[in-house]
Amino acid sequence: MNSFTTVARLLSRYVVVNTSRTCNHNTSCRFYTKMDRATVRCLPGEPKLTISFVLDGSHKHMLRDQTEELGKLLARIANNAAKGQGKAKKSKKNKNQATELTGHLNVKLCFNGDLVAEDAMNSDAWQDGAVLHVGDSKYTVQRNPPTFTTAELPASVLAGFPVCPKIEIEFGDLKDSMFTWYKESVGELQTNWLEVGNERVFVPSNLDIGLKLKLKCTPKDGIRCGVDKELVSIGAVEAGPGTCTFDNRHMYTNKITDEQTIRVVSYNILADIYAQTELSKTVLYPYCAPYALELDYRQNLIKKELSGYHADIICLQEVDKGVFTDSLSPALDAFGMDGVFRIKDKQHEGLATYFRRSKFKLLSQHDIVLSKALTSDPIHAELLEKVSANPDLKEKVVQRSTTLQVCVLQSLNDLSKKICVANTHLYWHPKGGNVRLVQITVALRHLKQVISEVTSDVPLLFSGDFNSTPSSGLFQLFSQGAVPESHPDWGSSGPQEACPMEASNPFRLDSAYGEPAYTNYVGGFHGCLDYIFIDPQALQVEQVIPLPSHQEVTTYQALPSVSHPSDHIALVCDLKWK
Image (cartoon, rainbow, N blue to C red; front, side):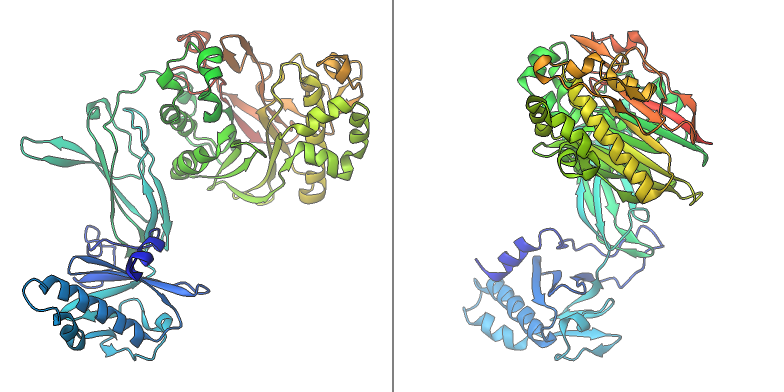
C-alpha cells in the first residue's frame, strides 16, 4: 500500500476532495481567486497538518509534520506530481519520462507575491491566502476553512414531517452556513432539480411524494466559505400517516414562550432496543403495524412532535444512544436546543435533557446511578442500613442501573434565576413499589444535597417516568410529603422482600398535571406513570397542554401506533417564575 493511500484513509474525516471554487452564490463569502484550492488543516498542539488538493484529476492528500521544512514537502509534491504525469504519458513515451519530469516540474509556495523560504516550518509556511504552484497549476491555500465533518440526510423522509440533516462543522458556525433544498423534477431525458427551500430544516409536502430530495449546504464562518456538500436522499419522499395524536396539541404550543415562561416536556419515547424485540411485536404491541415500530418511522414522528411543542426544557426517557447523537440532537439543535445524555450502565438507552440555548445556560451536572449512590454516598448510610436488613431486597435494588440525571440551568434573561432540572426513569416492575420507594428516597436526598451545597436555594423541577400510579407510595411521598412504614408498597413484592420504614420528602412539590387518567396506554394496561413535579413556591402552572382525547389514543386500539410513536404520552406544561 503506498503512502498516499494510507494517508487518505487516515484523513477520511477531514480531507476535502472537492475541486469547486470558493462559493460564488453569496456575495458575503470572501473570494480568494478564481483558481482551485489547496485545503490545509493545521491546529496548534497537533503534530501533523494535512494538505488536500486535486492535480490532473487525482486527489492528493498529504499528512506531514508541522515542524518539517517546507522544501521537503514541496519536493514530495513534485515527485508525486511527476510520477502521475509520467504514468499518463507512459503509453506514448518511454518509461524514463517520469524521471525526466521530476527534475523540471516547478513546485513553489508564494505568499503576498513573495516566495516562501524552503527552510520555513510547514506550520508557518502554509498561510491562508498563499498560492501553491505545481507546474502550470495554481492553488489558493485555505487554512482551516469552514468544513462539514459530518453531513447526512435521514434514511426515511415523510411528507409533512421535518427533514433534519445531521450536520457537524469544524472552523465554522452552522448559524452562518447556507442551505438550499431541491426536489426532483423528472424530465424526458434527464432528472433536474427544482429549488424548494433555503432553511436548515425542510418539510416536504404531499406534492413531493415519490420524489427524492437534494440538499446543497455551504459551511461558513462569517464571510469565509468552505467547500459545498451535496446530499441526496436515499429514498423518495413517502406518504405520512395523516393526522397524529399530537397535531391538536401543537395548536397550544405554536409559539416560543416569553422570557418569564418555561415550557417543559417530559416524555418516555420508547427505546428502539425495546420496540424491536419479539416480545414487543407479538405480546406487548401486537396491534401495532410492524412498520410503525421501526426506528426511522418513529423518529420522524418524534422529531415533528417535539419540534412542534417549542419547549424550553425537554426531559426524555428511554433514549437510545444512537438516537441521541444521530437523530434527536441534530434535529433539536436546528430548533435552538442543546442537550446532554446519560446512558444507563450495561444498557444502550438512557436519559436526555434538552434546553433552549437562547434562554438557558448549563451551569453544572450532578448525575448519579441510584444503586451506586446508595452504597457509596454517606448521606444514604441510614437508608442503606435499613435496606441491608433484607438481603433479598438489597440485592434487587443494587442490581438496578436506574439513573438520575441532574442539570442546573441559569436563566440568560435574569442571571439570578436558576433551576435544578432532574430527570429519571424508575424500576419498571408492577410489583416493584418497594424498590421504587428506595430509589426515589436516594434521588430526593441527592437533589437536596445538590441544591443546598452546590447551588443554594434553587427551585426543583423533577420529571420523568416514575412507573408509579397516583395510588402508590411514591406519589404519596410527593403529594403528602411522607410515606409511613405501614404503606403496602413496602411489601409489594411479597413478605420475603418486605422492608417497612418511614420515608420523607425534603421538598414540597406539586404535580403540574395533577393526576391524569393515564400517560401510558398499551393493550394490557393503562395508567398514569409520568409526572412533572414542581416547586410551588418558585413556579406556578400557567398552562397544561391537554392530553390527546381517548378517541385519538384508541383510534388504532392502543399505543404505539401509526399516529403515535411511543407507548407513553408526552406531558407538556407552561410554568411561570413567581
